[in-house]
Each structure stands twice: as C-alpha cells, then as structure tokens.
Amino acid sequence: METAPVTDAASPSRFTRLLATAGLVQAADQIALAALPVTAILVLGAGPGLVGALVAAQTAAWLLVSLPAGVLVDRLPRRAVLMAALALSLAGALAAFAAAAFDQVALLGAAAFLAASGTVTFVLVQIGLMPQMVAQAGLPRANARVELARATASAAAPFVVGFLATRVSPLAGYPLAAILACAALVCAGRLRFEALPGQAARPPVLAAIAEGARFVVADPLLRAIGLCAVFWNFAFVALIAVFVPFALGQLGTDVAGAGLAQGINGLGMIAGAAAAPFIFARVQPRVVLLFGPLSSALGAVLMALSPAFGGLAMAALAFGLIGFGPMLWLVMQTSVRQIVTPPLLMGRVTATIQVAIYGVRPLGALAGGGVAQAFGLEAALGLVAAAFAASAVVSLASPLARLVAMPHRAPAASGL
Image (tube, rainbow, N blue to C red):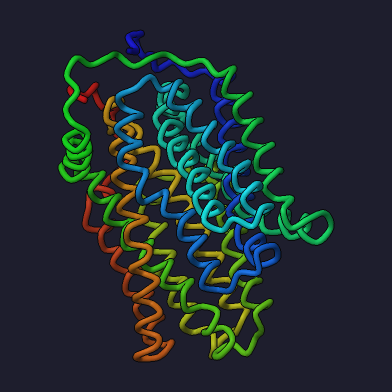
C-alpha cells in the first residue's frame, strides 16, 4: 500500500521522462492499430467483415477495460499498475505478431485487445500523475505536449506501417510496436514519483466505480465536459461514417482524395497541440472551452456547403478546423479535470468519461450511416452539424463558459 505524501512541486526531469514514456506508448498503440487491417488483409486474406471485427476487438478495450482499470489505478500502487500496463502492451504486440505469422485469427483479435488494454490503463495512470509532476499553472502546457506526441503518432503511423508492409513485410508493424513498447518499459523503469496515501476502506469494485461516476455527475465542470465530449464524439464518428460516400458522390473525388481530406484532420490536431501553449498564455480558459465545440459546428457547416463552394478543398478545411479547435479544447479540459478531481478518484473519473465517449461512438456511426441510407447524405451531415451544435450549447450553458481562470486544486477524496 502506498503511504508517502504527495507533493505538488513541479519536476521537469520527471515530466520529461513521463512524456517520453507516453510518446512511446502512443506510438506503439498507433502502429499496432494501423498494422491490424494491413496484416488481416495481406497476410490472412480477410474481407471487410473480418477486418471490422478485428478492429472492433482492438477498440473495445477502451469501452470494456476503462472502468475496472480506473478502480485499479485508484486502489493499487500506481507504479505497479503502470509497469503492468506497459507489459500488457508489449505482450499484446508480440502475441499479435505470432498470431498473424501462424494464421490464428482469433488469437490476433485477442492480442489486439490485450495490447490496447495496456494503453487504456497507461493513459489512466499518466493523467493522474501529471498534477503531481507539473505545477498547476503548467498543466495546460504539459498536456499539450502529451497530446502533440499522440497526434503526431496518429498521423505518422499509417504511413510508417504502409512503408514497412511494402518494403519489408506485412508483419513488420508488430515488431516495431513491440520495440516501442519495450522502450516505454525501460523509460518508465527510471520514472520516480511520490505515492498516494493509502485507504483503509475498500468497497466492492462496482461500488468504487459508482463513486467515480457520481463525482462526475455531481461536479458542474466535469458534468459539462462529459456531455460536451459525448455529443462531439457522436458527431465526429457519424461524420467519419458518411464522409467517404459523401466525397465520392458529392465532391467528385476518389478514395485517395477523400483520404487526403480526412488526413487534414490529423494535421489540424498537430497544429492545435503545438499552438496550445501560445494560445493558452493569451486567452482565458473559457475562450478555449467554447472555441473547440463552436469550431466543430462551423466545420460541419463548411462540410455541408463544400459541394457548392470549394469542393474537396473546403471539406479538407472543415476537417482541419475540426482537428484544430477540439484539440485545444481537449488539452484545456484535461487540465481542468486534473485540477478539480481529487487524486484518489482520478482513475475512476477519467475512466467514467472515457467509457461515455467510447460508448457513444458506435451509436454515432450507426446513426450517421442509418440517416444517410434512409434520408440521404445531406440529412446525415445535418445530423452531424446538430450534434456538434449540441456540444457547443452544452458548453455555452455550463460553467465552462464562465471559467475566466483555472479552478482551484481539489482536496483529497475519501474512500476507495
């Protein structure tokens, strides 16, 4: 049980090591994510249905693992959880390579889930460690650096995996993911941080999960952040579900052109993360927390207008805007969450919001596709715009719109 006191003193060297670990973990995760469909198609001869099932197994970890992992992060020594999470990522990458090499589809899906489970758990620990390693005033800048690493890995991974598949081997992505995960383990092994005070009372897992969910619902800022994120993710996934047929049918482009336009979203995310420290130093938090969802609603409007004005270029601009503004919002709201959430609830609060976000994504995909099928692509884009607008309305009607300065740090929570 951890008993050492927690300090708020900033530690640049410790944060740099945590940042390096996070960057390696995200790179390994994104490489594995990009490698899965390539491996399934080129090595296993899978069709779209099987590819979809394998990707679903990989992404399901965010929905199924978050809540119990949040309890473990709050309850067990964080160093042990951190190292176990990284070991899971490494084991999953190695198992995926073996499964693909021996043509074991079910094992490949299980390995993908295992590796993603390690990433999910690591993210929960990493978010909780940030307030301990970075002074409160530096949290937005520090979170921006972490998100910049993630966005860069997300944008680069498909190109790296494609190059390896054509020049080396379709299986080469998984050894690279394993190397990155192993490097993360080594980097984390030198990471030092204070322990959280232990708790005598440990309620059952479901009760502990419920405590985190109640805290999110009861806190006005967290409640608004969660609702805003739910509407936004519903809209974004609905947009992704209908954009390719929209681009082919309404914009007169091909699949490569549609992919290029979607890729601008990643560039927008990178630009947002890179610009975040400069912007945060000059505007109030409420400006960022309103700009994110409002820029997404504007992007949806530009997307709907793109067949008549600008074509594919307008659609690419819309994707860039939907990447840039929400990345600023993500960094800021993560910093707010880290400040208002008691340390002993951090894992469960983060897990609760993650489950809400990832739980709504399949609904967004189904709704976007269903509306497009029944009422046309224009109606589907209208649904996207309405959901983005709902995200903006939540922000406008909540305390997020009145946050002229960062809130005060939360006191320690009680039970686990």
